[in-house]
Length: 85
Image (cartoon, rainbow, N blue to C red; front, side, top):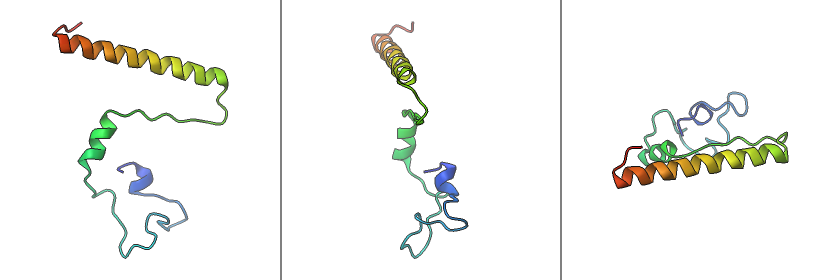
């Protein structure tokens, strides 16, 4: 919600449509506080997908995600057992 796309969108010229659609007053997303959203963003991954990606590109992305996921799980297991490395 603090993404510039939401905080200062320029969708249709100077309009805030659709963000201000049927609102008496526009929401100022720079002033909004959303702790649950912030907590979620701290543990989220955003992947851009482009039409130009090939099947090989996607396979590489999946391989990389699996590698990172496994490393994170192993790190968490080490921490839970009291071992740092």
